[in-house]
Length: 176
Image 1 (cartoon, one colour):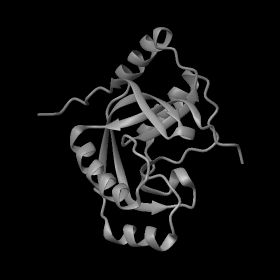
Image 2: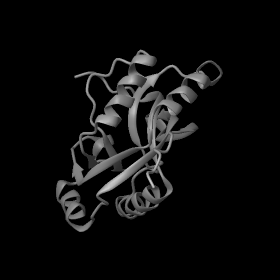
Image 3: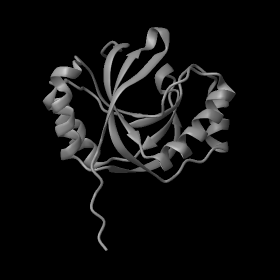
């Protein structure tokens, strides 16, 4: 198993306003109950990578113009015994998300070993019975829309996650 990299820049998928509001409400209720660290709702796409906005701005603008918003199927709340995957929303397999991730990995030469797309609701260590109670109590939406990719500066040692720049993905053309 590779050691966890806890500092650096990561590429996140972030959600449209409707999705953000619904998942944020769920996150806040769970996170307040368990007293976890605060972070923006996101789905990690890739990282870490070396980030330089001046050099990579055009690349991110190109990527965001090449990919449509991504509709995700959500499969409910799940848990692990890992601090940073304690409670999360399971995301169904998604070809469009995988295509975006593969393109980003190739563009920035990111050597990703395992990809486990999920939307975290709580970072921390908590008793399994408490997690099971939350899983039974809270329901997630069935779907979510990623409408932007964001660069996040992460320093897990001081529990800091900061979005430094976001790029909107294109909206698919709606048929009349």
